[in-house]
Length: 419
Ligand code: PEP
Ligand code: MG
Picture 1 (spheres, rainbow, N blue to C red):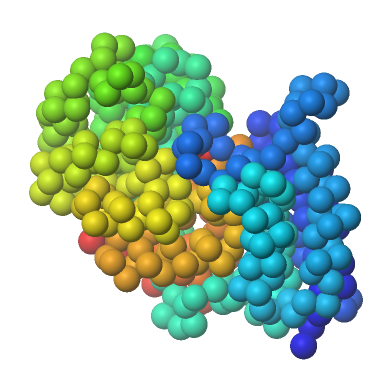
Picture 2 (tube, rainbow, N blue to C red):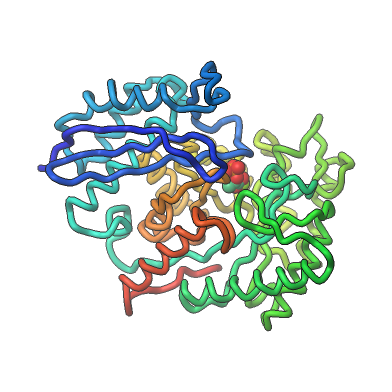
């Protein structure tokens, strides 16, 4: 048995330059570290991200209290625990916190430790991290949901929809998937330049041109797909994350323009967009409490469109069960820091797959060089991964890790099935 010797934490920085926590777990002569990411368009029901609100030196954003919690409390509590017993370690962390949304210690504090434990366990076993999750053989590579235009809370261009993404449905390998996206992104760059738009990028590496109308963005993407020699809706599909939590007022939504319209009118507009632009996937089309609107939408799309719950489910088993019973979605976005431990995340993934929901592993808009989610996607045979564009190293790091995993699997490497 390999026992934990100590856990050390430190404050590092994320891709937005905000402080975040890194934990390093030690056992024998080995150690492994993990860094917690941070969201911008967060759901109300997410586990709590603890920051030192009263520390003015860091504008209230530092995580020195979480760091001290690891160094002074968690390290002692985890000392001598078996590094391979992730469930026991996570249950100690959960009990130590004792609150529903991990408000006492902070989900960021707990998750950094939980991920580092998983990494160290793989290191001690001398196996790649992706082999240390659920799947033991027949590993599948996920399809990338590559973000190519940023809007909403991730850019300041006024675009209503937060993320415009492409998914290379006909890719034969992960390498090929990245190549297909590379072509579309480069052609989009040319088109943007030609039409006088900026090619600056937003938080997730997608372009953030000063376009405020959804359809203009969609038209540009369709053109870029064509220019790359692909068929929209066949070779490459357009996928959206609306992040509608940010666009709701008194039960009405301002998704399609600045005007607030009813759920029924919003659904009608969505259906038109789906048809016109061959949209295959929509994340968070409605607010986190609007279960009825979600169910109605799934029903209206005849369950043919991938409808993903992010802020709706917040990687939480209880909320997923409500969504399943109400047929509110057919897929779930998985973000480790929405729930706070690796064990709970794996439970949600297992349940999702049991009920036939697609699992899409996701980065956060404030992310880091940590590539844990790339391994998690393969180690759980998750259908897709959403980790930004081919820009910004914190996004590319995940794609590069998936390329390495594909190489490591060699002839055994297979892409997941899209439908
Ligand atoms: C998202 O909404 O899916 C997302 C990745 O953004 P954030 O991390 O800001 O929640
Ligand atoms: Mg989202």
